[in-house]
Image (cartoon, rainbow, N blue to C red):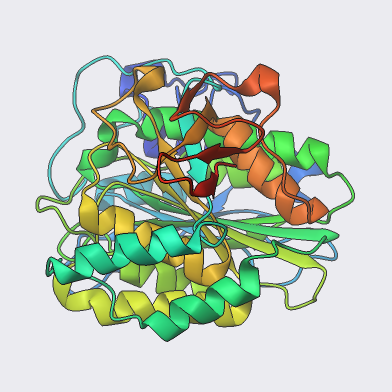
Length: 418
């Protein structure tokens, strides 16, 4: 336990001064969680195992797999692992399992973490809207056509026929499911720094809330983090496990750094997401929440489209979550990924006061709720097979003038707002 606590301090977002040798200490990002116990892991041994691997030219990367991290009995797939850059001295100290001395925060390739005080985020802070382009397909088709006619560089090379076929497949909504696989795909470049600590706290709470809401769903969780070529890593992943507290420990290891230019590597991340150990049974709801604020590189548009097609072929519904600072290409790509795979477009809003300005989506009306309410509603729709608008008590405000889940435009057209 002492070795595992030290490891969380070494790899977490909190400052080194906030970590101590005591097993009761937590980082800011993981303060909601207790350390793993023998009940969580199936083993009382808290020692971590390491292997050193890195892409050519990248800094050393330590792959951290706490003892007993593999799926619980009955879960499929290999044990989960997650990586974080560490210096050779930190690796040696970790291998020894020593609890002496002070922990140091590992630096990303771009430099050391900021000395500014870390925020103390509370779950339920971030706000979001949601939009279904398959239920508003005529409007989506016109929106996409307008951007393509304006020569939007980097647009996905998908065809009108592909989008129309997806609409025919998904317009009636999902069927009910009994089991649940969820992957979180998260951009961890520096531009996400204004929201990443809030997102971590939100997602920890959301995963726990979903686990409580569907105790019989045999749910499993996976994590894919990505940056860009030339950063400390391009993509790192922790494959599916059915232990929510252990998954949340992995989520707490994320930090925002790197990037440098606007585009990132979501194409590589979605390809790794597709390669996760998804269950193939028909009664498994397969969701991927893709959280990002930047597009793919223009030259990687074909790879991005192929990863989305592969997701559709696997029956994985992509639910993008657009963060602050997105542009036209990112919105179109995210909405296309949701439309082609049967997901829905989620977008953070300015109502929370967290992060930079959030782009007003190119849609006529929507409901704003807390992000956790929006995400759990998406899961509920997938599990129940029934669409429903937010509960009245959850609505913070509306964009446009939706009523009873829809709004009528000046043209007389009706659009579905939930």
